[in-house]
Length: 163
Length: 133
Image (cartoon, rainbow over all chains, first blue to last red; front, side, top):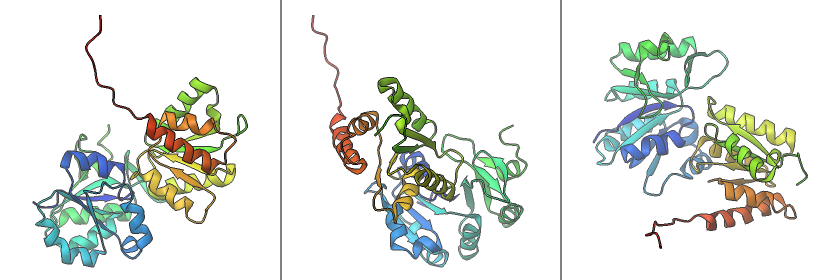
């Protein structure tokens, strides 16, 4: 079974991922792709805490993740791959063209970003990076929880999803 | 714990923390012992920043959160790093908060530990039964 969700979420592992998606998907593992976390035992322990023991958590840099992706994609258990920002996901996709869809799960307010959805704020550079992903054939949608509608990127960028 | 001085933060999803404070206020009239904080609309670093601001400005030593794997808990654990006199309690419930606030003779950390023990024992599953006539 392929990885069910390639998600960009600046909270990384948190309630929406472990419970919101984890329970309906019967999630067996989470891959957290982040340079800082991959290099820090303390950070890894932080994110491992509270994840149910039956759920595996793998930590990787984008380079390592690209090398191991095929193995995770062939895992029989449902899985989610997470990055904390658009740049990391874009780097991974450049290295791993088998990724065909990206979920915007949570990109919160920060200086220079503007509101697109309740849980998606983007800078002009981030908008451009997402457009580039779609030009490259990646389907980009925003959806914070499984029960919500998957909002196409075009609607996200025009701030039309919640009108 | 003196009246009207916050001694702990409750950080949780949605309006849960506000609801806890409201319930404590209704039951004891002492809801002001707790500061309610939501993670709604906040990224990981914003949650951490908000917690640090509350901890440092109000001299708070106890943080209660809801989900053990939630973003409030992750942020609170970051706040606790380098603050050995603080304590974090996850899986917050109303019995836990009520027990915590009723042990003013204990240090905040000891009161929190006592409350966890009491809250765990307060969890019960009561099966239905045929009505006795």
